[in-house]
Image (cartoon, rainbow, N blue to C red; front, side, top):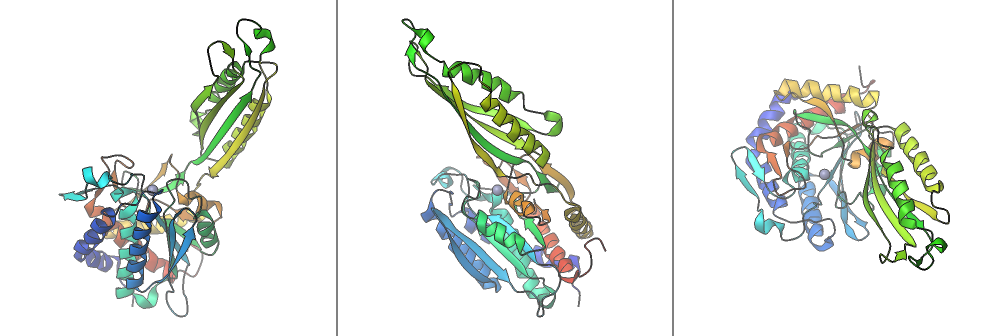
Length: 394
Ligand SMILES: [Zn+2]
């Protein structure tokens, strides 16, 4: 028997206190990406929560970071519908001790605390949506895998392989990162690259024989101007030289200098243009005697909405409207693990987490009422996905 989206909504609303208790607990356990000891405790707490819902849980090692939690819900037997991957991270950007100044607290419809919005709120939404489905619609659930990683903020260096492997094995990825203002889901994210150029020149006495030197800083200056010109606002491409340094003393022609830069692109075509241009800027010499090396890469490819991702999103939007919480579609300049899932060719909907603001700042907050609403939209969406067996737009 089908369960109406409004039934899921009412159940989740009725359990708002449970959602908030789990959120309070998770936010009150600090989990800086680079503090494996602290972050592991959150991984273990999440694993216990997923187990209590009836999921099969594995903790995968993630090098110097805390474990990646991989929780699987088998779905109905025999399996029906789409295989869905949920993705969320439990690490935060805040150093240990931040809770001392900014403890978890609720004031009206606003919950404050480090990571409440980015994105422990999203984890609570995912876990409670699955809990509601297990209780109300166990025989109609699609197979769901929920990956929770602890190294997203530094770019998922170690959980990336897990996320890519799981993305390949699933039909749709839903990322529980914060929602966009509107409220809206996130359908596109820029790709991010970090690059470094190192100029080798020739040191010489600035007074006695400057002609024997090759000034690496002057060469670097030419390159900075050329790099800045690669930005193309209309195409959504930004290129920022964020660091430059070089030289030793005012009276020494500088023998070495380097810069590092951040690139954000919306499309693969722009990514290719930037890569080609950076190689050509590195290879073009203005100051004779200098040579330049380039290293770096796009560690996050752009997330571009595919037609099938848009068709899935249209279903989610229809459900959201039915529940009384209409959701628009938006885009973000920041990257997430959704960039990784979509690069594997898996249709990806991001921004399924909490609504709020102030991510990565002491002002971080989540709207309390968005938690049960997004959980209801997610649960009802999963139920529809569990019954889809034709093309997505049917
Ligand atoms: Zn995040």
